[in-house]
Length: 555
Image 1 (tube, one colour):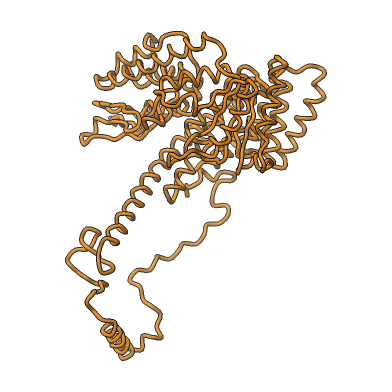
Image 2 (image 1 turned 90 degrees about the vertical axis):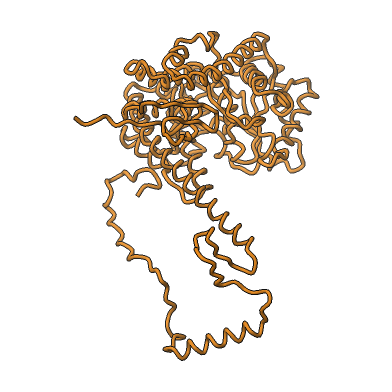
């Protein structure tokens, strides 16, 4: 009888980081969040694949799908501690992001249930079935989560904490203040002068521990009347802490049907590079070379707040019918000519007119995925999979492609997808769900392959740095020592500081004369010890199945 294949996990079930195994292969630790693992017995291949799929949903903040997957796993494998722990994190909407102060990963909340995390049944089962070391790590993380949850609930009871939330990256990689922080300070000073309370990440959270910062951020995000994203580069938009904040507000905006309650203030980037829900309205700082943008923002917000009427997405009325039809036609035309920015703007306007319109949500999803149309479930899955990457040739390229893959998966867990499934027809909902399931299975493999490629590129580039560093330390030119792959004490190519230019020129002339005497080699092409093998002929155009090319990087 064939034995069941046992598999040990590669990634941490809490933060998704790559695990480092001990020599015995049974103990592992996550260098990012500190989780420890003790695997006496490996997991079956089917269970490992199911856990990988559920973890992917959770790490992409698709908590509803993650809960569904974890419940299926716990029903079939009720003693799997990893599944129970993932289920507990998903039920409380926990996302781990880097803490700028400590450099470690810390929990943030996408939702804040009133029930205690440490008394949750899923958490208790995780402790029950986990090994001693893993259970201790779970307890420490649960205590941190529960303390933050209690602080958030207490602060939420106090009511509104600010009128405007400014979201931006305060410092660059070198620790210097970012360009966004200067823009934020200008806006904050003008709004404060008008009597508008502002929550600024840089000011309100400076010097605080992560738990104190998280409760302030959560309360401000869920009580503010207006949200402003300040961005001067695409890297700062995708920065984990910044992305965590604006994605959480986006969820609130669509859940509460907020309309025109947010904008972007940007520079050096195009509107297409902004998060899709912020492309409808914004301020391009390139149009204000002499300043004054802060006055326009303050004037608009003062008029808005004085009206004291909340702006919310409406449900369609008879008066809006003709207008919605026109806007939807604009969106369809933009998709047909592959103008995805124009399509996103048009469908966002349609959503504001009628928040229950399935075509508007579906069009916004297609614009975000940059897909022209949906023919069937298989074609939709193939179109999305063809945008995924599976390998890279350098560290920078691998990281860029990982970010692109994460962006696609992030879109598939966004309110655009959820509301498209909710408000569109039953047939289209089944098509979207089936296509997403196919994409997630392939995306897990692409991500694992890309991370492996990233590790190989990092090792290769580090070895190159060590080689050139050693060469620069050697004296008298090139020195191929045994440390870098040569054995013996050969000094080929080494120049002596005591030699003279005359002796060098004389040696060169003697070598040239010998070359002329030995066969007239000056007319021959240079001979290399290694020649590349014959390049195979390119396959015909119909070499691959029609319409499917696989993830990028596979051949």
